[in-house]
Image 1 (tube, rainbow, N blue to C red):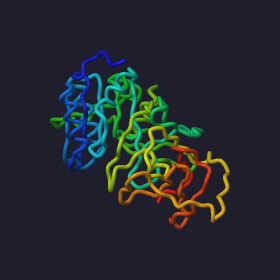
Image 2 (cartoon, rainbow, N blue to C red; image 1 turned 90 degrees about the horizontal axis):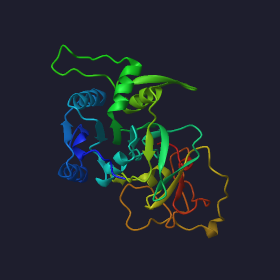
Image 3 (cartoon, helix red, strand yellow; image 1 turned 180 degrees about the vertical axis):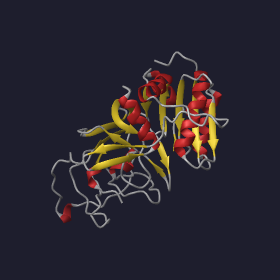
Image 4 (cartoon, helix red, strand yellow; image 1 turned 30 degrees about the vertical axis):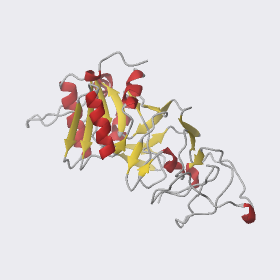
Length: 297
């Protein structure tokens, strides 16, 4: 069901340290055509500062919904309405990091696997990147009240509230210094607003090529229905004899720099401790990949 509030009540905030990816800007222009105000903020030295300023200014201007889009994330404009239609305080889409076989999020401890695509849905995450995130006013109000955040920089012409100020949290292996988006998620969670990811939203993170869900699991083939297995939950499998192994081949054309994958999606190419690709292993069902197959390079 579409969100009953008009698009004009949801401002789209785009912090851009440099140029905006053309496909991203095309989608932003479509959102403007549909009635969404789009604020592009170019040329900043600290992403936490610009997020603090944009959030403070947007709330002061009377907007009740803040839609965050990174300048290197390509999206379908219809997915903005998908997130709004949930009528939830804090929702997002997920995308991989550029290079490391990881998502730009932190899943909840004990999460064995996450389904993406046509059969995906809402999944609670611990932290999410703000490349495609919808947050309602009540979250900002709750975070400010719960943490007693002050209004800063009143001596200047642009006061701001430090919603995104980085912080550190205790972890079993020592303290974790959180980036500005993860820090906001931590504050929001403590205030009672956990981020929920809609895993049906397909996003592309543009680097040397367009990174999609499958790149976090090690494959370049694309699937409409995809399961990502988290580390530590991988079942024990055996490799087929050498004479029965098939050489991995991508589906369709392969983009330069993309990691190899099998033609059917049934194999994964893990990295050895030395960073080389180890032999193909059986055991992954179609459209599945295991993040445990690799280590961050």
